[in-house]
Image 1: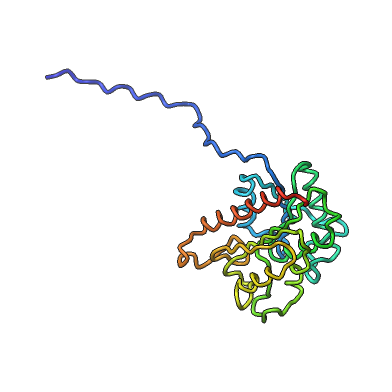
Image 2 (image 1 turned 120 degrees about the vertical axis):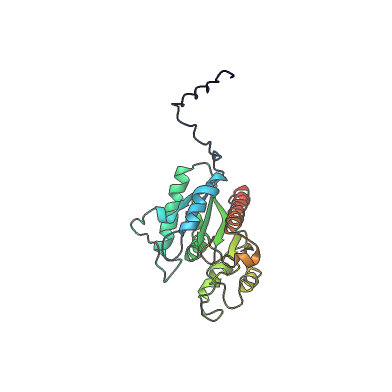
Length: 250
């Protein structure tokens, strides 16, 4: 009979910890987004997650108003008057903190829902009080043009925020195709309003997007996924931040 073959000894178990997965390093930021939340005073969880991950990985630092408690003479928010002194004071205070934290970067005002109305008034009426590196630009996510279940034009203060912006201001309205605040005619009403603005404005429609972006619905019928919507929203925000940063305060 052939001699028995001994099994080779098993290799000794490694005592070294497995190497951690290498994560993609974020580039140095090229701009700072000062973000004003909606009427509830808090940035939506999904938007916050996008800002803290994908947006910052693309070089946009984010300063949210809701991460900074209102100081004396400030509020977040007095909803009866978007452009009231206390609302404006809070945005200006956060802008100054952002400028101090990033002393060489351009600053871009943006927001969601009611916060959009506030930053419109800040840039329109208080431009001289903003840090000198603030861009003449607004990134508006989910502009609340028309209250749900109300007739179109029921609240004329809402379109007035956009119509009052002066020439020289650049605006991107990132708007869901299924935003509950679009009004009875849907996003068409916002497109028509933009055509009347003195500011240079554009509507970027988010497929299936709801009011609280990046939330979306009906994506199966549109042959989209939520991940694709998230990427679309981030890309639109980053692209506009680059455009605004290049133009600066001009």
